[in-house]
Image 1 (cartoon, rainbow, N blue to C red):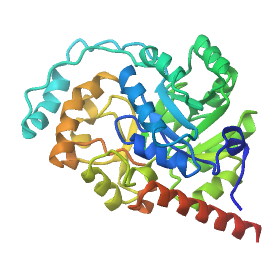
Image 2: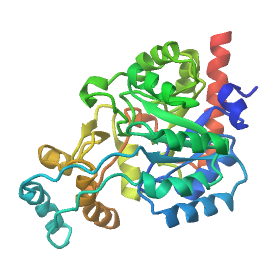
Image 3: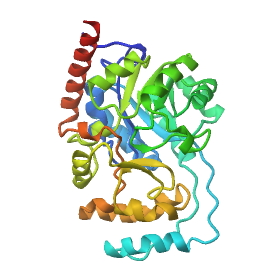
Image 4: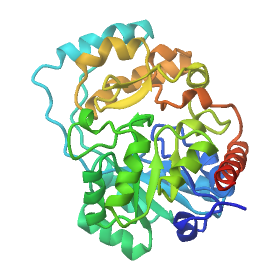
Length: 354
């Protein structure tokens, strides 16, 4: 019998599984739609899209499924102050640009997050859920979402952040453990102080807030889903497991890196974006870590390099975002992964009940 929770009931899902939003191209319309069609919640990581691209993505998802999906944005952040001297950061990445046959890097312009430009389109997208990370939303945005009947989900890496999200009015708290791949959602303190593992974080947040909690970080199979439910979560959000699906939009060399990685080979880094994120360690990460510009300036500085590296199959220059559960990654379609997760979860719950 499929596992049902408040998450499945409120969203009309068959299974309490959310495909994590993966801004940057990993969550293609085909992946989002396939997860939703299989009874989970597919999610569009929209933070790096333009409003027009988001509209096109939503249209492509809707052409493949009528089931619920989500849209994710970065919370509005002020533009960072540009360093007085960008020369060291440019000099650090210049050899890598040259190695890939690119022109010398240029200083990126300071820029804030894309929330204001994307929010109206996200509001009109027909998404069932608007999720966000890196902070809190303006009160006006929360009111607008409530008026549309969209569920609001925010990312927390500590109990303090979860309480702040509940006060804001979110319907769901995504508890992001330290094992999670990609960017850390920390916003109420230093990232280094918020590296709490999923198994420790989830029950403490469940005890601290009245809204449902979604577990995220290091969850790769049905055992992890069952464990999350046992800790009090209403569902799980999974990213790395979906990156090696056939529909995922990352480069083949990136997928292969995940499939070959071990659990001890991921690191937190600011090298690619200027904000702490977990990925598989590589040459660029190790060489640039101590010379990164603030987010999102470093992200703009490294984007041409990452684009070229993906085309050339050079994993050593890619931001290989992945969580600590990488050994459990498998090649399959999203539908096959969803079916396996459901079967494994039911088996794990059955073993516990027996």
